[in-house]
Image (tube, rainbow, N blue to C red; front, side, top):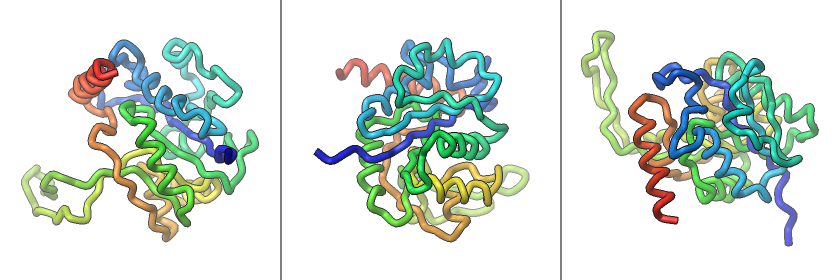
Length: 238
């Protein structure tokens, strides 16, 4: 059988979740009986034979991860990286640098996935890997825009309507060569909100891999109820 690829997965988990309206970091809020991040990690653990490393990036002063994931790391292939930064881009950049220091190669593919996208499935992760592992650039899960898209004036009125045929909603995981991504993030700074934006900024065009509407990022208070409903429905269907 072929050897599994040398493939790290990096899960930034250092955000404060200010838009979620929770009492603390949203990634530790409970959904379907478990902290949100536990569902995220489970999707990657289901493909443990595909990954050389599953790494969580948390803030240096994080005191909640041990209660949320008491069994993490549970193997030599899991890493807790306490190098989170003030922004998502900084956390990913610091996490990639830590992986390099621990032996990951610049030529390794790396998957970066938001801890708050707790509904991602192993099937979706596998689809991204299959689509990107022989691609020259790499790519990301994304969803075609279904809604009508408006631009707004400063006082909250419609300024115009944009064509939606070529619009996609970016999701994660996003998969790129580790060295290329680290260099792109170092050049882009903290303003970028996903890895693909940094890759685009150096003149490359990432591949769009169709994802799922269920792979949304839990961001606002109403998102928690929707994520809970999806997780409960999945439990009943097992």
